[in-house]
Image (cartoon, rainbow, N blue to C red; front, side, top):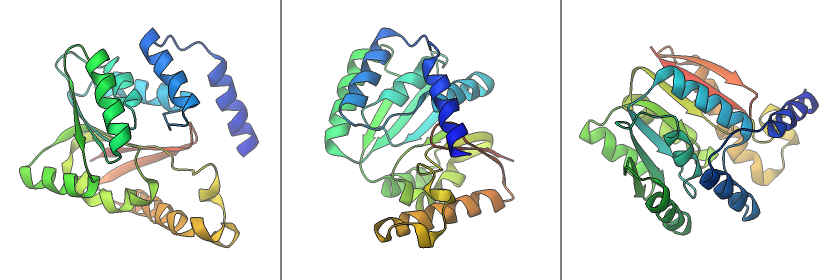
Length: 217
């Protein structure tokens, strides 16, 4: 199965995606610097869901250097706003620089800090979003979930990236190296919680490194 998945991803990589020049350059730079960015399959899915939902208030957990925020911006209305959270100082500074250069209408707001604390604050303020993209530390997804659920509006869409952990999610915990067992267990827990939550309709997809698309009922 993973071989077929890799062949499919390679096929998507071979198709010209029409990214604007600044995004194509940022993508290449991120890959060279080993900064994680959304894969081609993930890009196609996110674009499709944005075109379908046409959200106006987007939350992203995990900015990295800003590629995914700028990518989403390409498919949003000029009235749409993106709030994105990044914990790592170096990446946040780079993202801020990229947003200054390429976010002409100042639609993106970057917040630097611990996502758990920031999400708590957002809930206390009564913030709400119609589209949420989670692409942060995978071991923290389960800790983000209750706040994410509270922040997402009814009929809102939650997309969670990196669900497969390069295929390790499918492995038995006994075959996972000891240092990875905690994150493996937390991701398994997150998948179970997401699929069993009656307030969500969720589909798991193999695109990218695995993505979950959840609609809040």
